[in-house]
Length: 449
Image 1 (cartoon, one colour):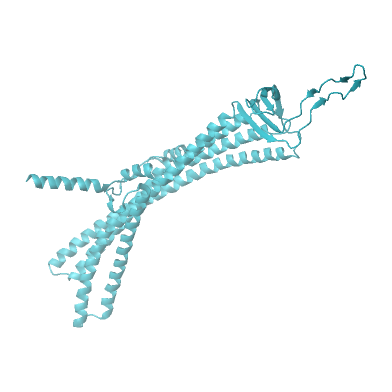
Image 2 (image 1 turned 180 degrees about the vertical axis):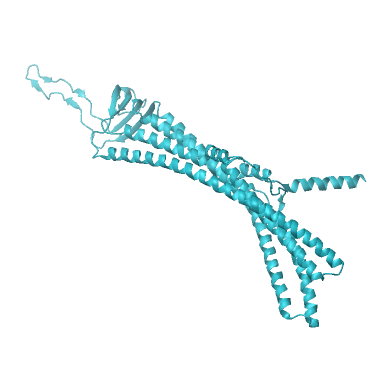
């Protein structure tokens, strides 16, 4: 008895492990999807770009080192003994008495080392605008991540419930196929007895082939849906058992409220507004680089040059020179043939275009919300219609079964009502799927999921 209970418990745990809800699929997709990983990498790169832009506000220390060989070094200045003349005897004294070296001959080697410290003082807002652009780029990248995440959830939702539709359709289709095979067998016997013509047999064979085609279509759609889910969640498709069914309740929210929420939670609209801010910051940056707006900075330079490798011989420091230079520098354009003016005009045009894009996107979001509400309302009406059709078909099937039991109908007539009921249930399943997609589309627009 204990062994039986243990086996039942293990079987229940295995079933629970195979069950895979849509919420679980979302959680795994957000953790494992390469699409979001790539966009997260883009966010990280944008953050590093912002840090780089901020670093330009601080000082910069650069160095330069060089060593070379001079084939023809400059000669020094030397007065040789007696070069200026000689005092005649009896003194006999040479002028100069010995070689006088005023400047030694230059050596072939040459070494140079310099350090330069530069700190911007005033750049007409160019550095500030660069930091602002980088910050806006980071925010835009985050909104792009949100948009990718929203699209991923929609794609996963479509794949998940396409699998649910295909899987649930298979049961009804297989029942229809079994019934049609029975009808075909009955008609074949009737044809052999001569009570019906061959056309009636061919008609049911055509219906059977159509159902077989739909079964193949549903099987392939289910396999494709599982593979799509595996792409997003990185799971084995064969281990996935879809457990979440279609929703059938109407949200019942006002259209005005839905439109406001859609505008408030739209990543695309937020990104468009950031694009407008980027265009404005780029305009300020471009204006800062116009003519007669030079940058001002403090410069501090340390320069060393010599001809002897340090510490390679005594007195090496005599061949080296040291210099320290401190000052304020400026650099700017006086005339550029109108290039800066054209750049400013282009930046102003880009700003105007970004403002138009924001206005257009607001209108498009309101229209998308209206279209989503329309699809949802129509889907709700079609769902109620399909439910009523199923209820009618169930009643007709019950009446036909009772009539068959009372021998008022033949078996084929009873089976036709069973097929009609199964077809209505398939239509209801398709309507539930359409309603689920319409509902999630609206939820995605207004930011509920």
